Image (tube, rainbow, N blue to C red; front, side):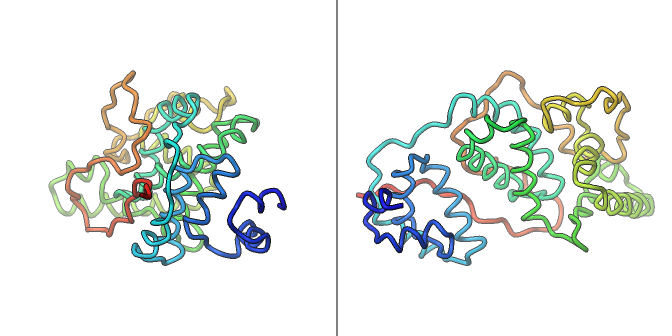
Length: 281
């Protein structure tokens, strides 16, 4: 702590208070700390800004003002190559899972925040018993922290409005009957243990093959857990039929939600968009 205090323009008591988490720091304080600790400041800034706006009720003016005095003297570091490879393998599946619980741009932001958190903790992920499980826990915690809950369980019955069958039915009575049945099923699914719920969402709502589900959740999967059952089309969500081009890498530096078509359901207010890093003069 003493050595760290000597590298920062702060008193040792301020450094101690900052490290304890009792205060939400301004970026002009957090940036030199990140530099001294050798942390990549690009993902840290995006997470700091998002948390300031969403959980600390800070204004955009406060966020901008607290970063104006920062002069970035080094180029923003790129993520590790193995992190980029991991993101390329898992990002599409992460987006499909997030869309079940957060069916607007909040789902995209949750995935972006997940990979930023994973970047900051990448050495821990690699040293963990299972890097995929480590990453999935971050994704799940990020999504669930933004998902409405009812009686302590995630509420995603809104997805019942957007099944493939709901989009094809034209008779209003049939649509209402299908919606009521699907909503009741989704409520029952929400009461499942976390691991079982994740498998059900990926396998039956997102329509993923069993091997893809295994690859997202863990590195190894018990052979007894494998099944060739086909998800019922009546429950599958449109995100399950998204076409992807294998072999085409995603932009590793993308920090904004993907462009979306106009929403067909009730409007939901979007979260704050991530900002680019401030560059002082």
